[in-house]
Image (tube, rainbow, N blue to C red):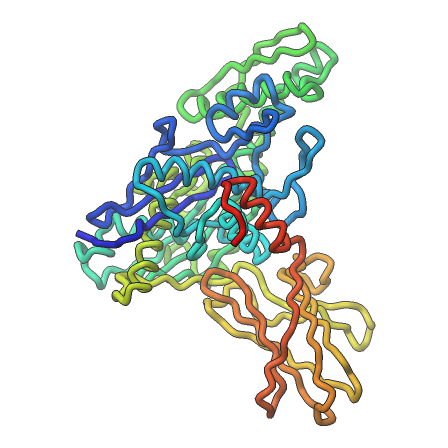
Length: 510
């Protein structure tokens, strides 16, 4: 029996649904029911006057108050504001995510007692900016985010626990290479991992943060709307109430088509009504390109790991959208292998996060961890420089993608006589054109006056295990470590974060 004084809590902060889990007294991960008695909470918000309602009741309101509904905020992380305003007010996506986290925290506290420490999951393909925004959302919700862990990695850890690898119930020599295919409501990830006993090592990862079950819903909405336009000449998507009802109908129909060959979608608009029959083959037809995108990314990831399908021992399906029959058919066609559905697509990620939280708490208390995780970075880290031949800005890669973490990279800058400062612009991405990469921020370095001529400044980038970045600047052949201001793109200043934290969960700044 574990005697941790602090509960080990993991949170799967999903685009469309979220879940929270903890380790029980025997070390087993258990999903914590929300206040409504459900294991998963819709990541949907309803802005009703001064009140923000999260979850099932917000989903119900989509049919009547679609204009006041906020969803898929996870897709907007990294932007300054959410793409939709409410009552004339704009909100940062971190705040939207924080309201979801706050509900999860409050509901779970009723069942396991008050807590603040947790591990939160993110898509493996999230860049550093979005990872920082996720940690900030945790702060706004009154949480102490000990770490963030990639969703496919968390699912692999849950799978390892299920095999008995983490409690000594299975052979510690167990080794296999698995491919985790994670198609959620709003994001897609694929990660190739090697499980060697209790060591979980990511070999390569890729994904798409703008691809998930939400896009299948959108295709159905568009298909039905086009049928309605042909018959009645008006577009139900142009009215918020009609659109809200249509969205709910299409989401329900998609779920029905997982179990049945056809479903009926009702569409009402401007006093006109239609019932449209949709078959599974129609859904598969209008979304074929979406599925092909996941297939292409999967093949690319396998290639990046230097492997073929013959090297994969198991394909693990995670995320609610993997329930669609077309997904299994496509993966079986690609791999020629049976698919593993042994972990819950809805709960595995939260379970893995809780197991990782337990590992961190044990490490902090001086105990030997019972498993290890080695991740890779999903995007190349670079700095913006000038091409001497073309005089155009170019990305200089410092740490290539799929490098095992943690890792330190560096860039050297020759200091000219009389130079007072260095400005380093940091980006993530694979393009040589900085404009096609994600700006992380810039580092402004003030130089001492008495440096020797032709001194060299080394800017050290450290990518941590969680995919977060820290920067240090040193002068070669000296003990000088320079102070610098690392100004992040689109990040909230601390004063704003303190104000949002007090507004969302009532915790005043210290």
